[in-house]
Image (cartoon, rainbow, N blue to C red; front, top):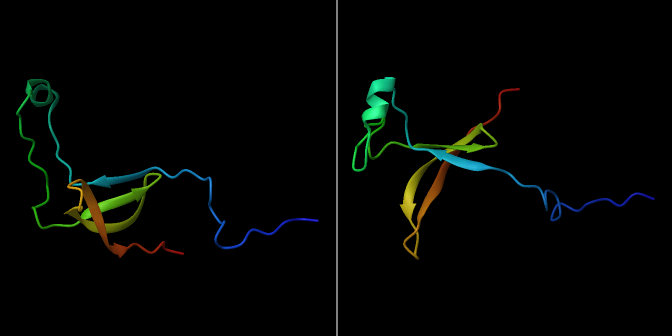
Length: 85
């Protein structure tokens, strides 16, 4: 007899690596080696642009950076990316 999992238990115990990309920049190796403490790397997005949200290196949505009640950084999801079938 097999036990069916309810929707509430679906995915329990499965780890997913979630990451957020603020933007990107291209640097030459000599520029990278010159970077030190306090250096600023200019990204290809502005302050008000969305950030990309990835799950296991797959783009799943876009969002905006927010400060939470306990003053940590979070991301508010504004759009989910639909997988092309």
